[in-house]
Length: 346
Image 1: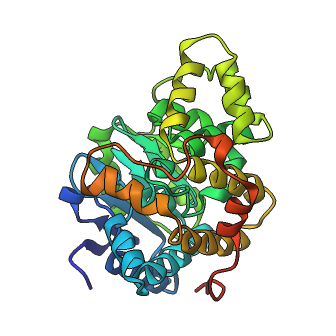
Image 2: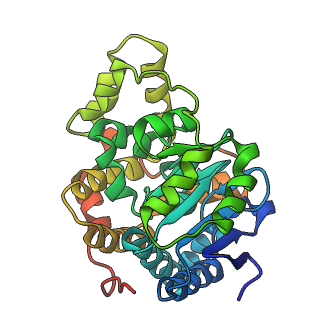
Image 3: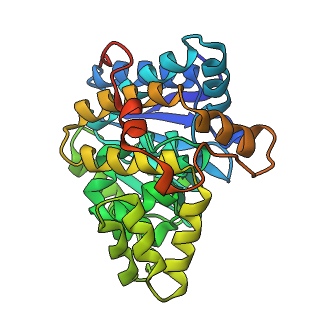
């Protein structure tokens, strides 16, 4: 068992802590394998009535995955990236269908892989410091880990906005959109965890919700989403950008500026993947995401985005296309093609 997670059983509670605080608890292959092993074991154990996952340190629940590994694997042409995605996506599906209450304390940064660990579970508890985002288009990639499934189910406009721009949400916005379904003040998380460990957890949802109810508060209020969000219901990325450019107000201008900074290819693929994901069940969405992920390994923007944001950190990517208008449908479809054997689920 890797020391990158801490797993223990307290009473009827199986408890996992992501233990890479200096790396904002970003997921590695070993972590995904260890979490999966714990969850499979605990699901079969009648003495375990619920599972809780949180993150070590004060800054993050989980800020993503091991993107540098994916970059290096793609450059080398080896199997590390594919193996990581297969393991992570199978874990996402396990969480989605888990038969026991699954609780995540999503305080601090919740991005990328951290979203996959949380949004598919039943009890998503925000704290004072929750910062949610799917910022993948900024590194020439797309919102994976089930993002193509859950984003359109927030409402197509909201899902496309979050997926295409990588917009960051606080706790109030997460509660308003349903990304989080409860709020517990950060300073009470330790007491809440202790109460779960002392409770009679019998595998029922009610046993967990009764504990949550003792600690939860309404949480911060979110500002209403602006009417300009409707621009993201347009039928193409080019049309969305054109609609934003034609609107008054700071919010629309900010979104247009954000879209122009991201990879035009990644934005175009993300738009299409979210649209298709609205019609897929979870397993089919995850199968499609594996093919998309492997397809991105064949694009220039994936490597350029990671280079500019995480390796050289010059924040000045040279994307394949100058604008969204330059991306062709053939270039988008090429990334959607089948690239490997279908994803295997647990």
